[in-house]
Length: 250
Image (tube, rainbow, N blue to C red; front, side, top):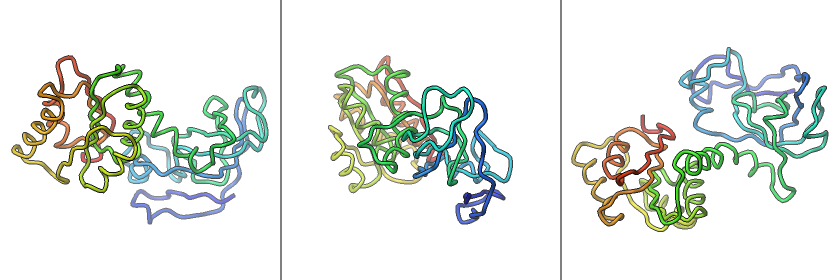
């Protein structure tokens, strides 16, 4: 089978496509014929040796996939050959086939296409866990989403609205904010891109407070990090929750 391989750490253009042996499912595993694989920020980090998980070289990146089960190993009972599923793999997804533990695959509805399904787990799974399990957001609370036009950001906007929150979407361009509005944001906040000095951080904090009636956000969803984090933290309401989701800005 063909697979995208990381044979040395570097940027995406250092990856190569080669023929590799097809995996054989072990006990409790399934062999998935990959129809689509998502591209996420961790996929960039892992090939540059900047991610917390470090598979030995060479390896195939790709942390989430969608496809059809081609074969099942001994003891598999929850899925069967021919099932359409999504799979969470960490790495190994940029290949024509991948073997996964059956616990790491989930059937998808007939109306969901493979491309959509492959990009579902990391974005919506991350945001659902953050908002429901960690923040325990409540109807009527204010949710501030930084980097709101990105994958996890848009998922947080949609899920926050579905959970009854008032959603403030923050991003670095008007075009991005327009997308956030289309996905249900109640308010938008334009912030500058790049490094923020102390005055810019203070100005961002004041904008957040203005949009929250001086109270600050009840929940901050932060996949950006860097200079934006402190500004948002200083504009968090009493007993607010600050969700550290990522570090796109460092």
